[in-house]
Image 1 (spheres, rainbow over the protein chains, first blue to last red):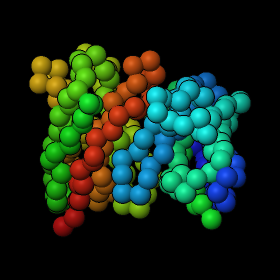
Image 2 (spheres, each protein chain N blue to C red):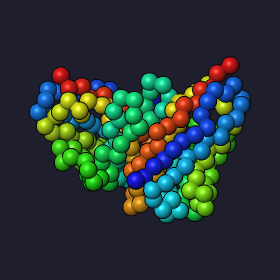
Image 3 (spheres, each protein chain N blue to C red):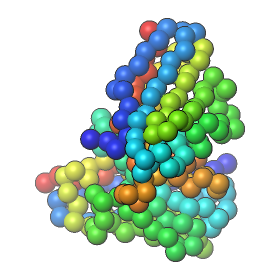
Length: 110
Length: 120
């Protein structure tokens, strides 16, 4: 059971907007910034969003992040076939004194 | 180009030990905090351990505390994970990951991973 809760799956057709939620508590998301990773099949994860809404160099602006209270979300606009991957949210947990991950959301492009 | 190359994975019996290494290149290793993250077959990501740039701050996940030891050698641009008293549930691909300079809980570069299989 992951500390952060994500839906196991999400889907959309090309061009659509997909949103993935990440729910936590006051000891993690509520008091720390959230990061998001994309993991394509058979590859290492890639940092997609850091500090709630910042994109590393090279990440398309179709990807955006937000945070409110104890929850965060990742939005993918203009969904493309290459966005089919697993997405993970993560943050620091003050109680556990460690980094915690969500269980991951598999995005399927229909 | 930033590169993180993980080595040392393999098959080990329950209760055994294994040491993973991560060779870093393409950046000033001594400036960055580093991490180990693992992924059991078909499962999600699990953070394992963190070490800051000068080894003065070290953290472990509860699942490995007391059994795993993270260390680094800034002269050799190398990160290590000594894993003792291995259990079946430690079977996973182990990644080494660099912390973002401004946000240490964001991992901006990852190695290719090494499979550790704990089985009799």
